[in-house]
Length: 258
Image (cartoon, one colour):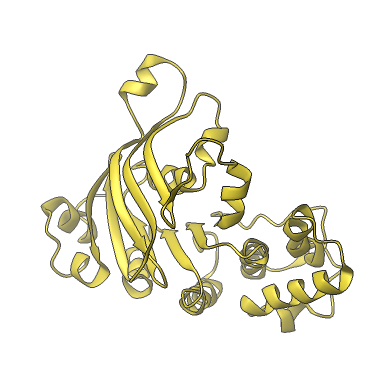
């Protein structure tokens, strides 16, 4: 299968002082992410999982003094190449965060339409169509079609998270990044998000950070185990959770630390 993302010797740190550079958050990460698959990133808190996601779509660099070395290729082209606009990269690589983040001053409709408007789409009929398409993709349309003018924050937590996924999908990204997308949700809402991701992987390349190893095991095709900023092991999920190569991976998935 085609590799959509190629991460090459990626290192990252925070802060301009020499001490930060000598203690990188990520250390020489290399891996490939394949189309039409879900790739899970697991590991203990503080191991660099979220920073890894933010480096893929260049959100890491919005932190003052943050640095990145190495490269990330999106369909063969560097996202860090000379003249590459990070805003365009963030449209091509959508992101959904741990806590549902609908824009609080915007309606359900405008939460989905905002990215389209920023991309220059003005025609109401086209906006209406794209909003409906995006909400249908996340199985939310039937639940909200009669109250699109209500605030996005009026929805339940699970609905808000699906709204955030719809907002990311509206601008037609190639890759969808999700940082602990179900950790703030109840089990039923979490199940709906997982079901949604299984459906979305038919059309999008998905990378998910999760602390829930059962979720990673049942949802993903590939799994990477991070520890102290390093990629310890990256392989088929079935192998990681049954016959891992590295003893540290086995110790983590069996609960000996983490």
